[in-house]
Length: 199
Image (cartoon, rainbow, N blue to C red):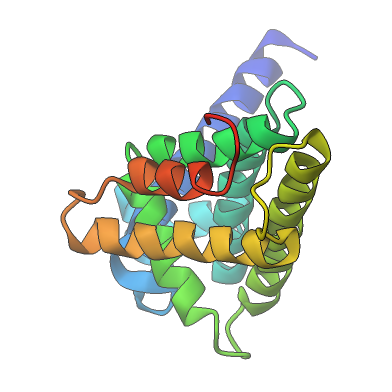
């Protein structure tokens, strides 16, 4: 590959990343249905046609934004091959990380609510995402039980979906309280109450 081609490729990747960031911001502000590709293109300093070169449809852009968020979060949760108590600690740390990413939290909260409609382009994505999130939380609690650190009466099959529901509910409260809600603190206290060891 020539130096010119390499520069062109890097420039294309940078523009794609900028489009994802601007789309994430606008989807969070206006929701998927209220966001316009032309507005996103304008924010990025490119034409509507230029945006379509990177993302041929609004649906493709939304799914790319959501997958980008998941890739970042999955990498965070899996850092160091964490399992059991360490994995539950990661959930609390992820809530702390989200407190510095208001745009991403807004995007997720707005679009996940919109996507409860079966005809929403991200409906299938969110169905799968929740299935995977709940399964991952249940597995972490099951591992904690195997480690001997789960309090008596706490059932992994119940605790997993409760943890995911608490995380997402806290995000809405955090947004509505103008970021005053301590997402990480509440989540950490909830998890610690289920354990026989310190988180």
